[in-house]
Image (cartoon, rainbow, N blue to C red; front, top):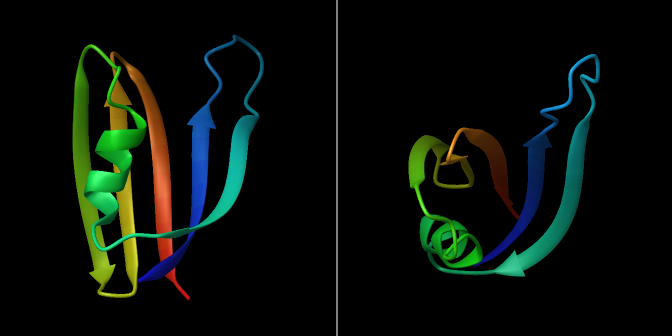
Length: 75
């Protein structure tokens, strides 16, 4: 399956509420495994998954306190 992925990384700097945002198109059968593989070198990784439906999946990745949000939209 092909997905558009929007990856948001929260900015930890004080007085800066901007986020780093990246867009990509990928092919995967399992978005959660895609995130696990992408962040495989993180020491403490916790994932939370929200399934809006089979075409839209949101994965929150807590990497030792820094949260990243991955929004997968099927194309």
